[in-house]
Image (cartoon, rainbow, N blue to C red; front, side, top):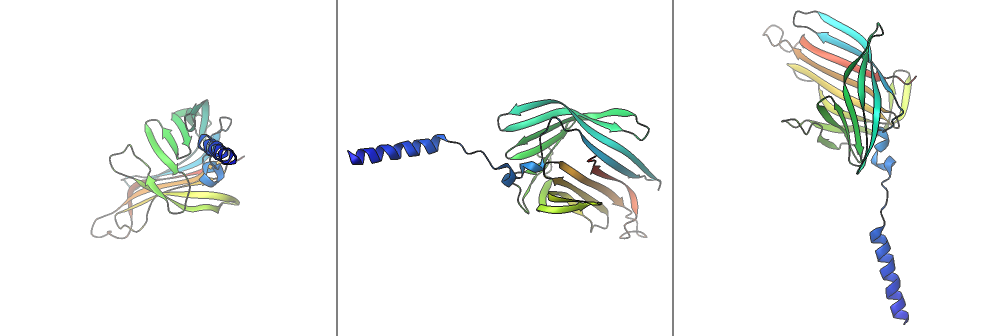
Length: 224
C-alpha cells in the first residue's frame, strides 16, 4: 500500500511538471530593449546629409514621429501598427510610411512600408548574429555589441543598452558603410547612424577617401 502511494505521488508530480508552463524572463531575454507600448509616441531628431555628384552638400533637419493606431496580440507576442510622420522645420507634418513593430520571445521586427528588418534576435547575447533582412536576396548579417552595457549619448548616460551593428566598414578605399542602432531598456531605439558613402576611384584620388556621393543620416531619440 505504501509503495502504491509513493508511485501515485510521483505520477502526480511528473504530470504537473509536464502541464505547467514557465513564462520567459523578459529581462534575461532582453525584450525590454524593444518595448511594445501603444501609449508611446516615439520622436526622433534627424540630421540628413546628402553628398551629390556635382560636389554640393545638402543638409536637412527634421523630426520623425511614430504614432500607433492599433495594438494586436499575437500567438507569441504583440505588435503595433501605425504611421511614421515627418515634421519639417516649418512645422509641416506629412506621412512618410506605414510602420509595424512586432515582438515575440525570439525576434523584434520593424516594418516601414514594404521594407522589414529583424532589429534584435532574442535572447540578447554579446556577439550574437543573425540575418537582419531575410526577405532580401542576399543575407545581411547583424550582430550584437555592448550587450547590457551603459551608453553615453550627448549629456545623457543610459545604464542598460545594446548596440546592433548592421555594418561597420570604415577601411575600404572605395566606400564607407556604417549602420549602427542603439537600444535602451524600456525605451527602444535611442540612436541610429546610417552612413553609406562612395569614394573617388580615379587614379589621382584613389585611397584618399574623397566623397563622390552618398548619404549620412543620424537619428536621436527625443525624451522630453
